[in-house]
Length: 469
Image 1 (cartoon, rainbow, N blue to C red):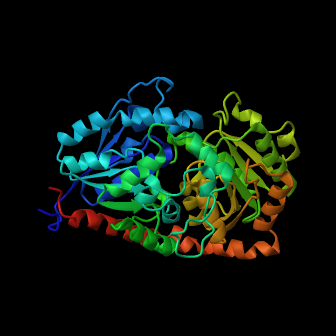
Image 2: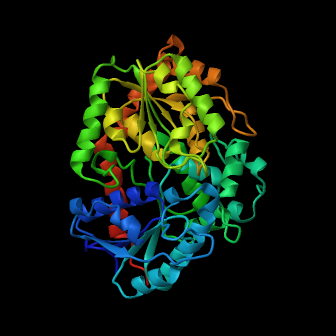
Image 3: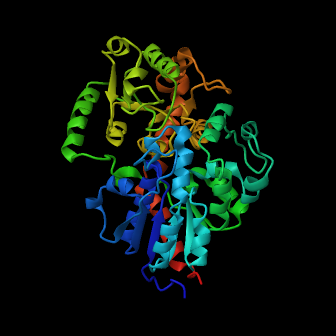
């Protein structure tokens, strides 16, 4: 039978072990639960403990599966944020070993749908064997996904070396400049599993699922969504941008700690002019050398503009503490206009403050969505992880920001180029169009009604799709 009588569904969620994946999956879970559907959210114990259970619907149940220990993976590690990039392949190997317990759970439940990530390429075939429908949920945008092409291209296409990913592919049927820089592709190569590469995982996730969804909308990138439908020959249903207002930003600690941190930051921001401050945050998993981080700092200093720079406490590269990324004397020299903030910060609150004008970002898709939701112009500094380089080219092309010029081979840059581009984006007359375009993006990225319509359409697809047999 099918679900056209609007019977309530049981949906299993299985995200990759990264905070930037887990939170979008949780947000979709919350929406599905609002519609009356039961959700089983499958992950490892430490990742589940990080989620704020108290604010969730009783229709959401957490299913904890211990991560198998394997040689090469540090003990008790369960997330990419706990690892340098070259250790991520070991986490993928351990994640693949969850196949038997995941299958056991699905066999002994009444699950109708499983919504899965790209890394568990085996899951859609397991679901089919068990008579369960499956959705591949790509947590990024359609343009990035289209760059990789159809499953046939991914499995045995022309692109076999990093250099071959630095040009726009032939199947992109509209004007585009979205491609990797060589240094980004080399970095991505480093975090792939030699036994099962991402170029094996992605085509399986696409080919064997019933439908594909992603974190975007046709209002933002209609050409790319249409292209994906042609490339895949199956439904591609954007579920919207998952606006972050109800996403918990704090990983741990009490609400009063959040309020205390925000009180300090807001007091500092209150003393700055409207749209004058650059917010700088490079995510939790960006790895740069100390030399490059110092170069970035010198560029920020040379710009002469006010800024808040959030610096992580965790090492940015092995053997280097977070504090070492700040050049000696930097904080003293910029004391009258800059604030270096160590550890977690309430990003959404900072971006929403009227003194913030622009965002120097590593181009993680979640961070971009938050910034454009407030109309903040972007200074694009790709973190070289995942599809961040593709996102940087996409947003540069949309003219909602500019990308800091970097050497194609090694990703190096100069402090002078950072200062010049930052001033152009933030204050120079030639950046007026960029600032105007970014402000206009609020109509898409800040429009809850529009994005909820996408989620409604996605939910209707699940409700009306014929049950697997």
